[in-house]
Image (cartoon, rainbow, N blue to C red; front, side, top):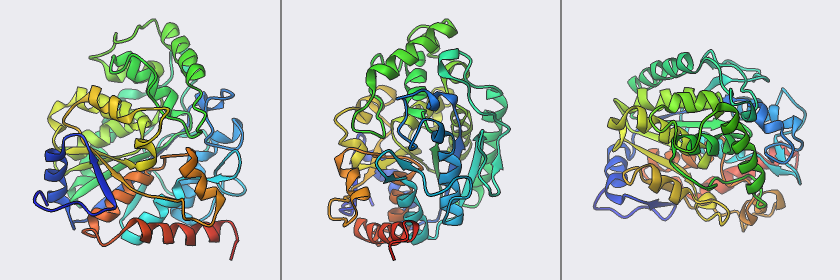
Length: 370
């Protein structure tokens, strides 16, 4: 693989040598996909999250995303998880990638207020408190330890592991943890809206850090404490899964700036995993003018590359999907990581066009267009 060109469906940002080394080890091999669902009351703060038609409905989004992936329909709520304006969840792309690749996948309950109506792997977490409380996540050490165990279990039967999330409000908690750890000193996180509420997020996070009695960088060596103070319940589970799995097999961290805090925590707790992980995301996120995944990753480590899928919805006949090209959604539910994994597992036979065709099929069925 190191001597081959990447297929046009994929691009690399950062350390190309490490990226191609990892890709060469898993090209054409079998992966397993996990999506950790969780709730944080932070998502109900008006204006913070667009991952739901109203602030209240953001509490249903993770469960609905999980149900969509597993059942092909939502049970916990009517309709499908949408942004204001009717833009569909990125789980439509995740589902397309999982169906095309036939990759096994599991839903992990990091801590939900609204639980998915399906079997989940339990982490013993609880719904997160408001980030403004300064006491956001309970049972952090137990959830982290369970994550490590699960990561080890997943690595036994697979050549690589994909770790992802659905947790509305998670870019705000990610910003808080990144600041608490001193990884960033400004707001570089994205939003599911093209109108990123940057000032509101920064105000909210500043209030949380003050309530916790911590300043920027105070918890640089204690990421689990940072998560406990201002994170969300998805984080300790996924930090653990990454560390547990990456001891044995490569890990694709599927997600956007939300998962940056998870990556930062994981490599701080176990630097040995560097060289065996990369971030899998989308072109939409990498090209977002209102955030910078590249700058965040550069601050975490120069040796954690980003492999992103060049999905393009501009030719779609559906306005809800075209909106991704206008700056909506960009990432979520591991849509980038699952797409990258599908391409890897098929040794490049899966393409962006094939994924788009499958997304159209899923979208038509969900919206009753047929």
